[in-house]
Image 1 (cartoon, rainbow, N blue to C red):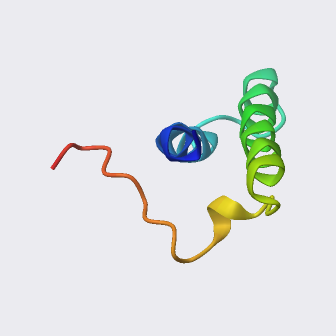
Image 2: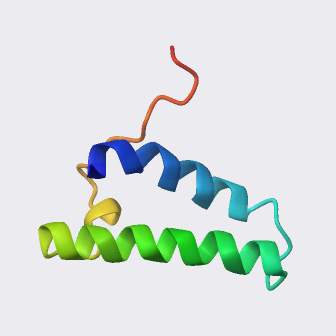
Length: 63
């Protein structure tokens, strides 16, 4: 499950850079990222699962 969520989380965090901080859209995207991190914490015991340096960044271009 976490493997499937990784690309989604990555895209969401990248999109935060394009959304004005504090607007409703930013808050909702940020909340989804936090929820994914919370789920990672429940499943692995490590809420910082996606922050670990050994986690590869998904290939979003399909190359």
